[in-house]
Image (cartoon, rainbow, N blue to C red; front, side, top):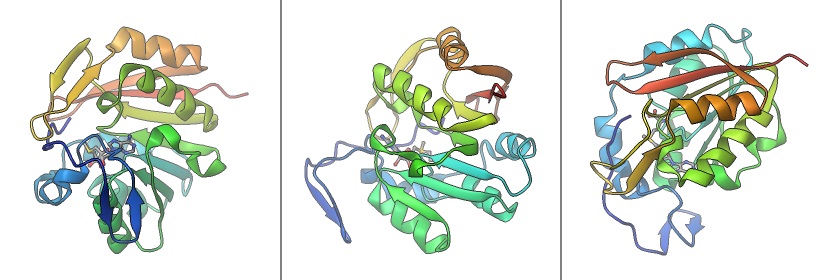
Length: 212
Ligand SMILES: C[S@@+](CC[C@H](N)C(=O)[O-])C[C@H]1O[C@@H](n2cnc3c(N)ncnc32)[C@H](O)[C@@H]1O
């Protein structure tokens, strides 16, 4: 989705009180300001429909939340107990400014402990395919494990096996393809309950963890 990103960021950078020794945002920090002007409502209706399947007021983790518009904002407005993670310091600062009462960690999903909690719902929109292939597999395993029994996962990644250069970052993105994503989910005790395509032709997998 949203193949919107920029150029390689210097190895070391300082943003506010956050120092990261390397860019873990896969190029998004470099285009954080631009992204905030470009993000459309793409995907909002799919996430809204998914959220309606979650327990009212349930816990939701948004992995790669960006600055929280429009997806996280909708979850907050709907009364969910939202937690978020993003690796771009600039986008996290913008998120905190918008939603000062919502917890967000500025960290790479690959290293996150997901707040050491289990969630009713976890979503990762526009994130999984930014990661190297083995990191994608590991993230899907860890997100699956962080769901409560009966919890629901929603993530986007192309249906086909493919790789491409992001329009703004120039970084390579890659999709493992639907067969592998479905098989990974099944291997972690999740059943794919639906698949969706949004108006930007981004593909989504919606899966439910088996009740224990
Ligand atoms: C395409 S944007 C999507 C943002 C948001 N989910 C949305 O739909 O508007 C990708 C987001 O993933 C974040 N990101 C990239 N690599 C990450 C990583 N390794 N861990 C956590 N967040 C990451 C970027 O900073 C950016 O906010």
